[in-house]
Image (cartoon, rainbow, N blue to C red; front, side, top):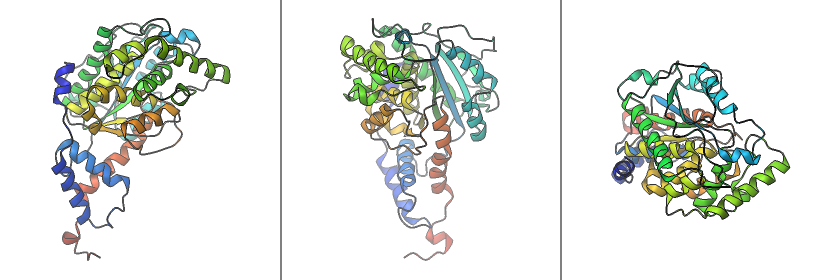
Length: 367
């Protein structure tokens, strides 16, 4: 599945991008007056191979959840059980991501790809179905159980995952992308949940960019100074133990990644193969995006950076990917919240090409 997906990913369509730029020049506005929105719409035209590109709707958030053996190193003040408890909150509609998704009319799919503790409730589990449009119902969060293993191993002691486990998680992400797109989604949004997951994200970003761990490691859920120092030391220790090779992206994910990171990389690859935009959330998403780009460089064509996370590694990763975030609000929650807030910006950028009159059609004089 991974090889087939990568083979389907193509570079942006230059003719469609040129047509979008030409169309912008004829719309009733000064040239360049919409700033970054114009280039975003051009990029989306290149992804779709059409001008104007399809409107990016309906939107579907995919929240991948997993736990981490490195939690034993004291890198987070939160107990690991919170991962499972938050899944219950997502499914009950009580999390921030639910509030933002309702506002945006986006569906929420929660994927247990490696949660360590049992879920606190026994919700109805909706298995993947590639043809059921009900999966895009914004009013009903749903759970897909696709657990590869119950949490990763401690990456300071051994590889977090075997290569087969990492591949299984990536392929889960690809399957979820296919399912959501088959159900009619016009844009996918990344979400994540996993106590301690900013630590493997920091290792992944350092591994793929070569940046120093001090520049890739943040305070996550708000750790104190001693915990932060320990976290940086853990990132350094993981890099020294595994010496991850960015030329072997799957190996990097296996050695130092999380199950949700690997699954998000798969979601991004799956979206790129289907010429569907994927709106990235915060540091977990962009660390996964680095892996996706290493596996298939043209996958970057499908990526839109929703926001600049307060986690420093996110800026390092975005710079490496050549992506500029749409909004910068100091967010560091995850879940897909920043991507959801950026969604109207993406939709607006495309709607301009669909709905704004040209100078000729509106009878407006050009300069």
